[in-house]
Structures are given as C-alpha cells and as structure tokens.
Length: 140
Image 1: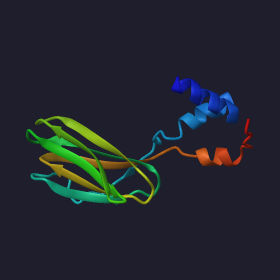
Image 2 (image 1 turned 120 degrees about the vertical axis):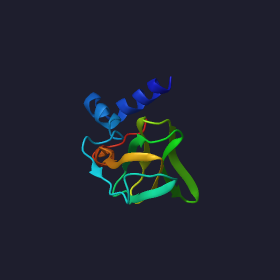
Image 3 (image 1 turned 90 degrees about the vertical axis):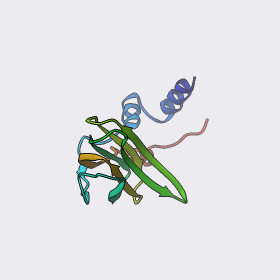
C-alpha cells in the first residue's frame, strides 16, 4: 500500500525516468575516500580515529578479529542523541560496520582486538534537490 502511494506521488511530480533517478539519490557513490586512522591494529577497546563528513554519506569501518568478542564501532552525536553502529565478532572473522552521516557530523571510530582495520567514506549520489528546483509543483 505504501509503495502504491509513493508511486502515485512520484508520478505526479516526476516522469518514469526521473523516478528511478530519485530512488537512487540515497545510494552510496561507487567512489570513496580513505579515512586516516591513528592505528590499524588494536589490542584493547580504544578510539582509532575520528572523521567529519564533508557531505552526506556513509562511513564504513572494517577489520579482522584477533580474538573472540572483538569489536568495531562508529558513533556520532546529534543534538545530544548518540547514534552508532556496532559489531561483536569471533576470532578471524573479517567484517565491518556502516553508519549514515550528515554533512558536518563528526564520528568517532573505535575498535578492540582487531587488525588490518580500514575506514572509508562514501558520499551519497545526491542531486534530488536539483530536480525539485526544476519542477513546477501543481496542487490537485
């Protein structure tokens, strides 16, 4: 039902080709920016870096567990509310976490018992506001 309502609303403002473009605006770009970390190996729970998003996008943190209960986390604070993404793994697992961030938000990257840690920022494709500015809105 919700899908039908959204489809109806989009059809009032966008052509079929534009609707597909709008639907992909929140998807990450295929290009990324490496985030510099203070360390790429951690033995205990420790901050390994921070990053301020230059645009709306996704932060990805990944690494290999060196012990059971190894952890990776990304956290940010917005108006006093702490948001984050967290994973707990077993030894030798390679995995990662992702967090959606708004332009200007600063994120803290944390890890425990991990090696080969990497962090990346993926900007969202965006552009939806440009389409809206070029459309004439008609109220029924």
